[in-house]
Amino acid sequence: MIVIPIFAVILALAIDFAFGDPKNKYHPTVWIGKLVSKVVSLARSNNPISEKLGGTIVVMCVLVIVCILIMSLVFGLKYLNNLEVNGFSKILILASTIVVTGILLKTTIAIKGMEQHASKIMEALSKNDLDDARTKLSMIVKRNTKNLDRQHIISATLESISENIVDGVTGPLFYFAIFGLTGAFIHRAVNTIDSMIGYKTDLFRNIGWFGANCDKVLNYLPSRITSLVMILASIILKENWRHSLEVMRRDGPKTESPNAGYPMATMAGALGIRFEKLDHYILGDGISDITETHFKLAVSIMKLTSILFVVLFTIPVIAVLSYLGWWSFV
Image 1 (cartoon, one colour):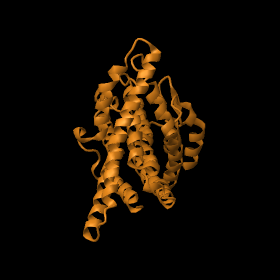
Image 2: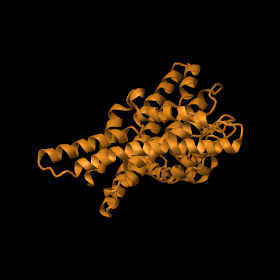
Image 3: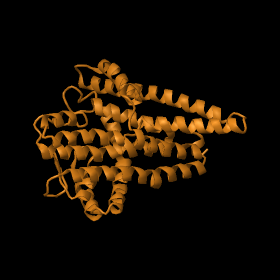
């Protein structure tokens, strides 16, 4: 029934905008992270090939468990909706299905949560407490933050906001549109695995290899579609969308990740600033300092992009696939 996924995705977005993330102990992403932590130690080996194989098994085990849990829930919801009931009971079942689906989908996206954490970094900077800002930044980036100056801290914060649009919003919504809740949670699980063990360090270089590559594959299309939607958001917000498009084309492929550079370059171009990760990349060609105004504009672009993505991609894809009969199976 087409109204279930459409109303569920609208509800998920509304819940996130209004309330943000629940406490950690109730968040499915935290549960996934704990599961990864428990099984990753089993993959350790002195042999690189064995570690890669072990890392692959870790990813597959986590995804199988997530799939079984979510598909079981989806099957139960479908069973209830197929019961031969009428009147108020039918409406109650339909409404309950929308609410449950919306709440679960919301746990795969993080708009307000990113805004809140980034705001804490900016607040620390406003107090000239660079150490506190570096500590808070280290919670959302993989780079070493210990010696970053003020401008590089703000740059990394805005880069994280840009990348989060894909990892924490449009990526899950992309796969929800096609594969339902299972798709959204697979994306969230892979992204969580990559953020935990996808680092190119001696500790996780081999174990995280498969998870990192899964993340690259899953985000290939969402990152590029999202960048185009971000340009549309820039037009609506009267930012420099032409420069945004130019920088996206020129600098999008510059990052080590084949995906992360696109939304980051698009944001840098729209704001007329430059993002820099020391010894890795420079995106954009702005010469002015990055300020709190740029931060607020980046958050506005993130929020508007999320809404536009739902309107222009998620709901139309659900509608088309429902018409073709696909959504009766997911």
